[in-house]
Length: 435
Image 1: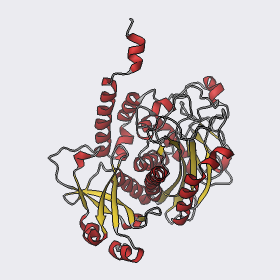
Image 2: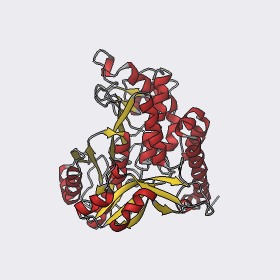
Image 3: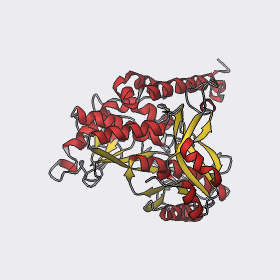
Image 4: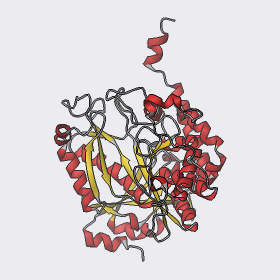
């Protein structure tokens, strides 16, 4: 029985609901709805003009309605009179197929039809900066090797602990927080879950981190590469697949090398095959390619891939297998759409299982120093335009995601690329003025 949001609000002292949907560019859009009106909204949805967000629509389109999913509702720990709830977009009674959460739910069903449940955990790195975003917030965070810096993480204890406490209150199972490899950068880990729940948590996590940072007079950014010379923000995904009851991990096999089953290797084979096309989704901004094709950073490593390779417990590759029954995809960055990330993982992986794809040779080398010795390993795209072209060529991946969402994403992202190329930069002036 679906949760009655009106009764839930009364019981929990909620005065307002933020009915939220995420557009194709990962931007979160919301209507703030009084609790007195939520009963009608739970049936009919909150109205939006799709053209006013990053969806492929025009001002002539009819109202798009975001129908709240009561299973996703979260009471804001820092403002308990407000609750956030994810909405599924519909128009004239039909699902909006290009809406990312709708896309993910369709892929979840495809996995369920195959008797499978995909579960993931994500590691969404972020920087705490000054309010204008021009510098990291901690002037003393200057170490050459700042990763796990005890003093630096404790100087931001108030922010980190507040967020972690909230995750604990919400039952997310937070289990570790650390200062990451770049000055001013942090990572907070919480338990893995079914992909739809993980995507909702990922969306809410970004909203929560930004809100708590602002409360403390700071700014949080998930931008892939906000500072030149520093490690970028990744969003690594730990992936496993379970049977339909969620009780048995079908990726786990003690008899297999690394404890990864044949089905797990097939799923990985799909990821490897579609990696170049996936980049448009996993690394969706111009700035993303400053991270995955970065020169060595001040810490000595970028911790980001630039080649399609896989390995055991080795962080210099695109995919690593850190333990039995799962693998880590290190490709996505902080700009990734939480729903399209999960959708593209399922789309690529299911094809790998269905066609029993082989991920190819495993490499146990340091790709940052010995990568040149690997022959014929595909290189990841050098820029967003290359990634969009790779995605457009990958007809199987586009079809699996859905032609509507794929066409809309490509159209809007090409427009974004064109705006970027039309932008005049100081680099051009510095390098061309005296030609």
